[in-house]
Length: 278
Image (cartoon, rainbow, N blue to C red):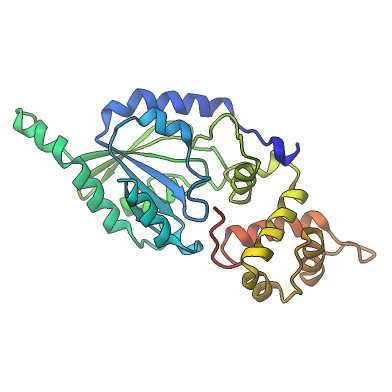
């Protein structure tokens, strides 16, 4: 499949969309999880329509892998959105997120008690595109492994309520992508960060475009990691890196498939430096 036509909307994602719509009335607020490396491209425009005026917190996850995080937080806050950056693996930003969630839910929970209802925890729904780190965030919030983490796009298929000890209940939902990407660059960024499965497109042009982008915008990471001469030709960079790292078949021929997978893996793990691709 050509990158310019990347489309991915499995049947269970349509079901996930319905799940969000059906359960929105059960929660006090929505936590929209974004990838801090692609804070615009990882937004789902469908969600804005679905959520309406429901209180929302924008969470920039994987902030440890991203540059210019503070500038993006400032941008979202200028749009009258609550916004916080987190690293769900190491735990930075988690306390601030919990405090924000409780604060946004406070008016509704107090209103329930005022009208004779029993006090209850704040209720939040976590939404986001595949592989943005929802399971990791929930596990960090809960303090234990409540959710099985699968590093494959779109594996959480049912809603789950997770009790948080300090007064916050979370409704997890499957990750959903929008049915059509009008912008080919957005599709590329989603594929680079693994929101789109590697199995549905040709990796070579995808990775070559990634290398070209990194060489133009963030060359220091490539130089430090691979000790190569920087070029803006993605195929040349692919060859240099593959040969440097021993991705070679019999006869001294580049093992392209091995090199492509290695580069993607190292980029996704943050080994090529902090980036912001939007």
